[in-house]
Length: 246
Length: 177
Image 1: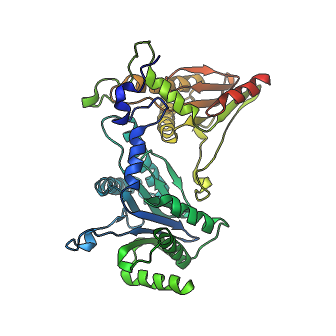
Image 2 (image 1 turned 30 degrees about the vertical axis):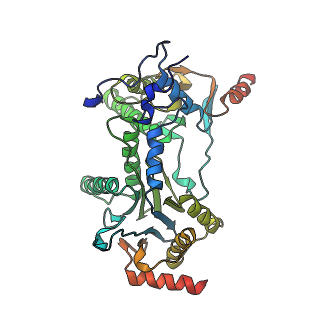
Image 3 (image 1 turned 135 degrees about the vertical axis):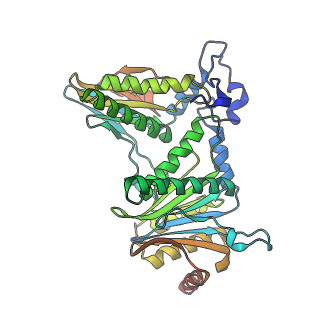
């Protein structure tokens, strides 16, 4: 009957397969999964926390240059899980966009608008053959003036949702299962509880205790809406608090 | 559009005369969440399933039904990101009409312009068709109206319609009524 899979190109560029799927987009998701790290984000009552693994493959590398946590503006942070090069490109464009927004409209770009912009850009790559989708899942976080703390996740397909808690990367499904149990009663976590939920979620899915130097933690709080990464000492405090709790 | 290295259309005719990319797009729509619309004598209703992938998702952040103008709304079945693109383009077209004619855009005009956009993406170089079907519901001087627009760019006016999963059950139900 019909000619089948479009000459086999449906796996090479983003055109539809006979089942109505976009293989390139699905492969981009696979690239995120096989990147080897897992990230977790949790939204509390008045703060947002993201945790990601910090794997430094070579002792000669400058550890401070290996990061997946990027400030986009003073108030918005982004953790990118997936292909690092694609992540840097996305972060650069997001920073530019947020700065232009501030210049054009006179107020800080809200988190959800930035997330939508990232998602719309990703959608363009799924529809135009000349660029492949980026192999990055971006979790954007910040404190919105009207809506409080917000956590958004944007994926290679162009979807974006606000989340109470979410995960991306290698152990995404296990982390989501863990978080669903924790968030089932719609708890309103304090800042410390938010951070510790995120860190213990990562510990649980990786099934190993890690040192403070092996993870990165980024936070925004309503009382101090600047995005910042926690120092190693602060991470240690939380790790200690978790192990004492258990 | 017309990205230089891809100045040939990706949607081409098969030997049997079909445009298979459009057919695949319709398959993508058919595996999307169900939505439907009904036109009444004094209004139109559109509705859709809002099944979120996890309880962790903040359901207030998801809005599948969107305004295009104060008196025209739309819902989709299929790929959410593609829907956002169409909503943005349609809103802009509605605003441009308003600015030019100082009158709100009639429903038929907006549907036609949206459908034209969708058709362009089936013929232009280097792009794939949209993976959504739209239900556009509006109320203007001609009264309540309901249109369905497909990935091919064809549109029809309906008294009632459904799209997405289980569309045959939905349509049977609607036909009986």
